[in-house]
Figure (cartoon, rainbow, N blue to C red):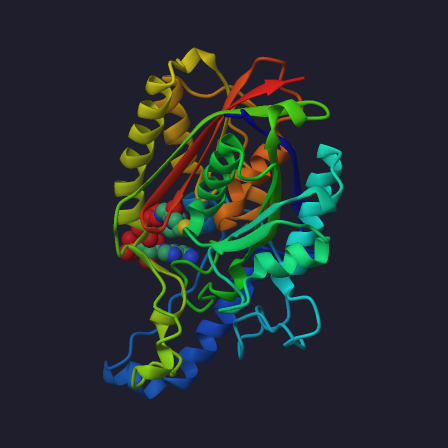
Amino acid sequence: MHTPAITGSGVFTPPHSISNAELVTAFNAYADRFNAQNAAAIDAGTQVALAHSSEEFIFKASGIEQRYVMTRDGILDPAVMHPILPERADAEPSVMAEMALDAALKALAQAGRDPAEVDLVICAASNLERAYPAVAIEIQSLLGAGGMAFDMNVACSSATFGLQAAADMIRSGSVRCALIVNPEICSAHLEWRDRDCHFIFGDVATAMVVERKGDAKGAHFEVLSTRCATQFSNNIRNNNGFLRRSHIGAMQDRRDMQFMQNGRKVFKEVLPMVSQHIANHMADEGVAADDLSRLWLHQANKTMNDFIGKKVLGRTPAAGEQPNILQDYANTSSAGSIIAFSKYSDDLEEGSTGLICSFGAGYSVGSALLRRCS
Ligand code: COA
């Protein structure tokens, strides 16, 4: 058995951003347009008028200040309200592969690894650009990597579930150098016309290199242990899928073919689930709250993270102990905790212990206990 270690990580940040002010202006223009177009039905009481969104609400309810997107085209146009990404020819790299490649090369550079040394690529993300061939296999080809590659989807927990899969394979010896990539184009499944959620998501890609601790060329994070759990819930759901054409009426512009959530219920049900999951994981590994130097949490909501941080540490986390990136990136699904890890881990002293935890649709929750080593 080998000890797995994260030897490199990387983040691809899209070139465009949208502030809350820009987002709210676009949404309110859309709402006014919708209400004008449906004035008769609204007057007759058969259609509910759309209310305006507000910057104050968004910041207070979520902590989000802006989000990055692959394109602004369409999103801020009240007549469109979704991103417009030109379709690519089969011979061109897909958008997800291109984003993942950028993050992967940064992670490999940090690990001091040549892409050809990779023998496992896992593309773990909430949405996949096509049914097949696997995006991971395309990334493997673009990298010139060997071995095998596969896609997996556990929504917001995809990265930690991917980390567990890779770490277990490193442990058993079936692979030697694994790459986990999380390209998330959340802007494409977000319903920008729904004020309850139009502010939630952003786009990004993250990557991690996982290999044998003994192979690490420099500072790394030993993977002490991982833990993943799931529990079925319909409170976060998207009904889009390959059976869509087979269901009469499902090809229409239907709300349930984008991201939907019952935010309040998610909040209430996921918080205790995650807090208990982390507490059990730490207790089973003999890690006390005082032993934890850093928490890299899923980046959905600031209040949620404040609550979990306090519950796990038994006190309010000190500045920097539980870094948030959601104010800049919004919720980037599976990539959020890995952005926090990638940006806020280099300063940890040798021997420090940290915990990555992601959670979301499924429900799903995944955690990894890591130790900094030089
Ligand atoms: N602007 C202004 N008002 C808004 C608004 C907006 N953009 N969106 C909703 N509101 C209103 C609601 O209509 C509601 O009004 P009411 O009280 O008159 O009914 C009020 O603000 C509160 O809405 P609510 O949806 O209860 O807000 P919230 O405090 O629960 O915050 C979320 C919403 C989504 C930020 C929060 O529920 C959340 O983060 N949940 C967990 C999300 C999560 O982790 N999801 C995982 C996804 S991967």
